[in-house]
Image 1 (spheres, rainbow, N blue to C red):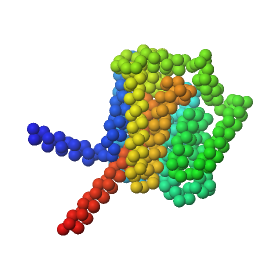
Image 2 (tube, rainbow, N blue to C red; image 1 turned 90 degrees about the vertical axis):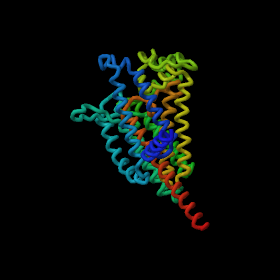
Image 3 (cartoon, helix red, strand yellow; image 1 turned 45 degrees about the vertical axis):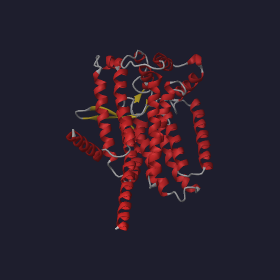
Image 4 (tube, rainbow, N blue to C red; image 1 turned 180 degrees about the vertical axis):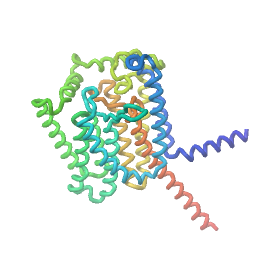
Length: 404
């Protein structure tokens, strides 16, 4: 009995040696990944018959590999000092700009939009890379660095201008083909700038100017459709959202899936709407989860993201360095906000956006960058815990020296 306790203690020490940081966030990230495996296996049945001759295990194995790689990235990133992310964020920001331009000009057209870059790798074959996922993380890292370095002069209008030009540049490159992601990034950036003590009047002026610019661009595109090919799609989605008689097919199927789920249900793999709902494995995976596990299951997923946000806020408050605090707030807010948008679309609170559900929707790029982002949050948490432990040891040593 005593030997078992010793072995258990040794295993816990080994585990804590390699996995550090906020344990709650670790558990939630792993739980969401497990949910992803169950949801993807359930929702890709019809896709497997269409593209893989009925090989339903193909997408499960693919997602399993994605999850293992993502968790490895998270483990690797969380072991790094978060101070390194300041300079690396600057590099990623400058890398993201040409990648976004290349996507806008030469990306393959998928579902009427250019959102990916296609690469041909030997032995592996074709892989797609969604550049906006990199851009979201790079922009948060860049703004966290800028706000930390310019905190004493951030209320100055000139400093604000230097902060907002990168935001407008990034969002402007994404906007033509992915309006929802551009708006998500813009809102997340405004939230981080507000927390970074930027004057409200500057933020209001920016929001008004951006809204006027978008409306002007949409007006021009109405007469010159070739400028923004996606305008008709955006208009149709917005109109159908507010017109009950013109609801889109996927919205109706999503509502049907939610209705079948009821309040409480335990029917993994027994979804029927997966055969009718387009993108049941990505944009509407939340509807499939509710169909199989009921509203209680859907609320459980929502609660996990809310807990991640509150744990991240706690980590940000305890971090002694401004860069770490801004980085944690920016990443957690952007990720949870995206999750809320995806869930709102599934339950028809918002028009169709095409946003995936972080950690759950199928897609390697989205999952990997979610893991990297959470790894950065855990890195800040790990450094804060180590600093706190070192301070505690120092205090004990001082007290012991005074007593002797």
